[in-house]
Amino acid sequence: MNWIIYALACILLYGIMVFFIKVASGNGNPIASSMFFISAQFLAQMIIGAYLISKNNLDIDYNSIKYGIIGGIAAAGGTILYFLALQQAPISKVAPVVNMNLVIGVLLGVVLLKDAMNLRVAAGIVLAVTSIYLLTNGN
Image 1 (spheres, rainbow, N blue to C red):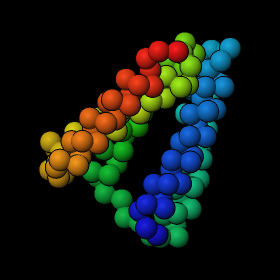
Image 2: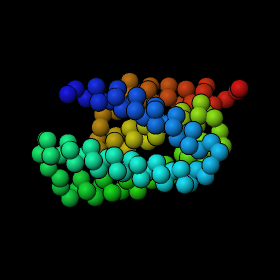
Image 3: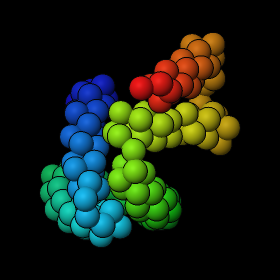
Image 4: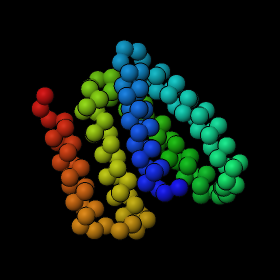
C-alpha cells in the first residue's frame, strides 16, 4: 500500500484520538485517564501488530526493539503531559501546539538521519510555527 494512504488514515485516527483524550481529560483524573489510554493502546497494538507480523512475516532486529522501547517511553511521558494540558486548555489550542512535535521530528531526521533539508521543508517549518501563533493567540 502507498505510504500516503497510511499517513491519511493516521491523520483520521489521530484526530479521533485527540478528541477522546480531550473528553477523557475533562472532569476526572487526567493521569488515570492517560494510564487507561496507554493500556488500551498497548493491548490493541499488540493484537493488531501480532496479526500483521503473522501475515507479513516481518523481521524484528535488536535496533527495532531498542528504538521502539525508547520511543515508547517518550510517548508515555508525552501522553501524560498531553492529558494534563488538555485538562487545562481547549483542544483548539493544545492540539496545534503539541503537534509541533513534527518539527522536532523533521529536525532530528535532518540532523541525525541526514534527511534532506531544502527550501520547501524550511518554509513548511516556518508556516507551521506561524500557524501555531495564529491558532493559539486571541479568542
